[in-house]
Each structure stands twice: as C-alpha cells, then as structure tokens.
Length: 71
Image (cartoon, rainbow, N blue to C red; front, side, top):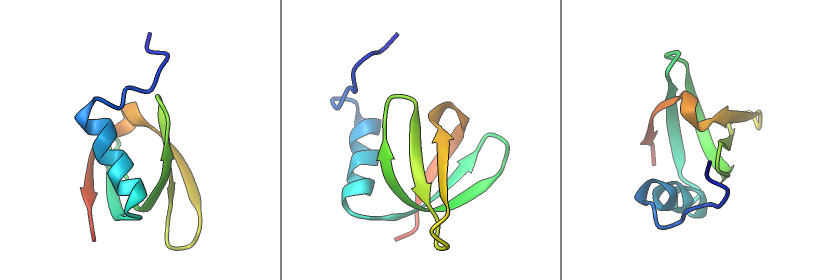
C-alpha cells in the first residue's frame, strides 16, 4: 500500500497543475455522474471539488472515469 504522495507520477502532477492554475474541470464518475468545479486539493485516495455554488464534494479517486478541463 502506498503511504506517500508520489509527485513523480504524471497524473499527480497534472492534477496538481489544475489545482495551482485554479482550472475549471469536469469529473465524470464511473456511475456516469458529472461534477463540475475546481479541484481544491488531492491526497492519495481522494480529491475535493468545489462547484459554482460553493458546494464541496470529496471524491474517491477510484470512482473517477476521467477529468476534462473546461478552462
């Protein structure tokens, strides 16, 4: 089991850049639900997304099908 955040992984760096740039994203989940907003943080297992209504969603990474940038 991973116990450290591996910033050498391209996927981790990409999400970190989205956070740093305050990018609008659309996350499509495996359930086909779609959440749009900004990623505020990520850790080994989850990320927090805030939508345009300031509602926050903690999303398990294994539930994400893909992430698309909107901005």
